[in-house]
Amino acid sequence: MVEDSTIVGERLVTMLTAMSRAVEVKRAETMMMAERLFVELEPQVAILDLSLPDGSGFNLLRQFKELRPDCLVIMLTTYGFPEFRENARKLGADHFFSKGTEFERVVEVLSNYEPDRLREVDP
Image (cartoon, rainbow, N blue to C red):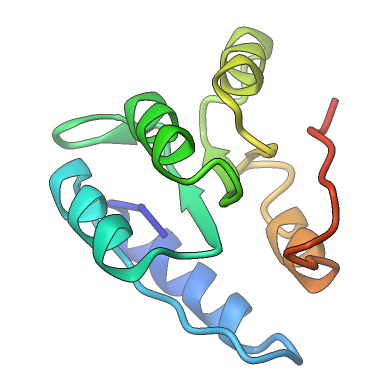
């Protein structure tokens, strides 16, 4: 998970670790930390915020999908504008959710996540 807000990060960790399946959550607060963890851990899933102290989640999305196209990437942002959603889709995001109205959808997606199953991008 790449999230610079402590409150949002803690809420996500609580929600994800409460899932019925085994989930290990690592959190990065900056792009630099996220890039390092992504290479070291080779995660199956990445949850990205758009606005980070040292750059854009769009840059991470691009990098992550180039390194590991099979990684499920969920964009979770306060900037749920249609143009951002479209840009995320073009860059390879599997899902794009607004923190204000779709926060819980992250758990819904991950509860049904099967690494070998094909994924579709949310409309």
